[in-house]
Length: 80
Image (cartoon, rainbow, N blue to C red; front, top):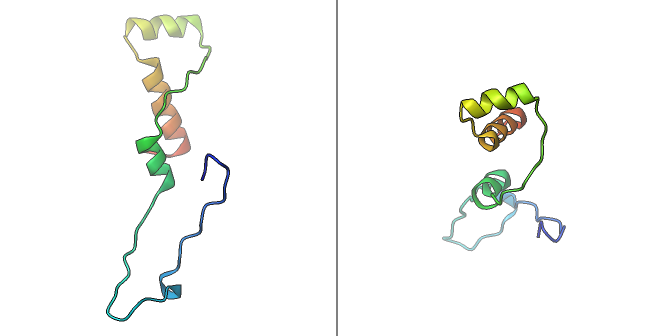
């Protein structure tokens, strides 16, 4: 639905659900952001520019640029 830009349904309020006698409701929690992190991790290529001196030092230290960028972006936006 998201890919088709369709509006996602709103969660039901338990008190608004009519249930049969002797039945029960089960609350199902769903975190869309967590789902995306777990299932939509297709890599996207990005081009960036850094100073030459910084690149040289990072290369000597075998730093994984992609991993550092991912970690920094996740920290910046407040996701784990």
